[in-house]
Length: 389
Image (cartoon, rainbow, N blue to C red):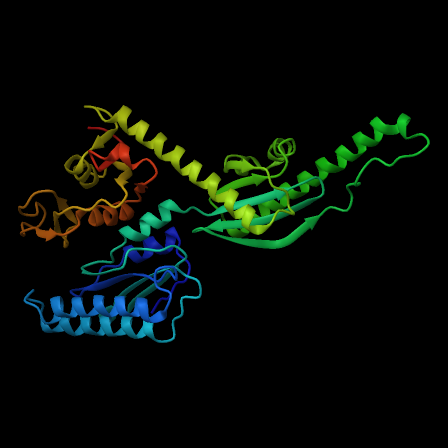
């Protein structure tokens, strides 16, 4: 049994790689946001409805499920229900994802500080599209706020902020130029002396920032402080961290935590919009015969099947029917037979989910376009390619 509280790309990929041997995997997404469900009974009622619907359809319905699969599925549904309504508490979490295959001892739990649409999916593999959308939307940011004597470190992930290590204070930096009888003659020398101390302070903070990166492995870096100090700090950062700087804002180490979070989320949203626009611009330039881009469902599925895809782009929330051979992981947009085993393709209620699963297994980057979704309104999906034909 595996229970995971923190969702990472590595954990997601490990989970998606699971394939049961002749049994089902149950994937539960539950919105437990206190704004929508203020009482425990509210989301528990929604959960019971999902469990009962799955039981009617898959255990007592006419889907032709054999006895062993029904028994395993019943264990999954009972275990999920007992977990959510038993000792589990949301403790400020807004979303919950649970994946279970009792027959194989497979069990994953992800607690999410963002809400997700409630759904229960029974399938031949974990339903991961919702989680990939969350991971794509929320990168792990480090925020470093500096002034001439102090520094504070924060991480921002999934809309929440956490402070680390308290406030770093450099006692070597003088507060100001002291007044005195000969101060006017010594003013420039004292000012240079102070600036030398400030530079040493920024270098120390840069070193601490690199150590913080080695410890916490964040995706991007946001710099905060006075506008004239940030370029000096950026210049002394390790080159690897300079490449990870995603934005900046003005707020010193003494700024309240809510202000740091608000400004960080504003920078994050701006970064996401710019990155989505850049990806779609590349796709538009490459989506021509002989180019390294394709748009539309069938060309994108074909590119995935040929192993060409480098980045998969999906309009946020897009889902559509397709056809799949789960044995050989063959995807198609039209009914027919699998070219590998010759068996009849199964109808897939959401082939986009199967595309995401295949992309993750092929180490293809998955991007859910949400901030400029109107630019994918017609084609819905596309891919930037590793190579052409």
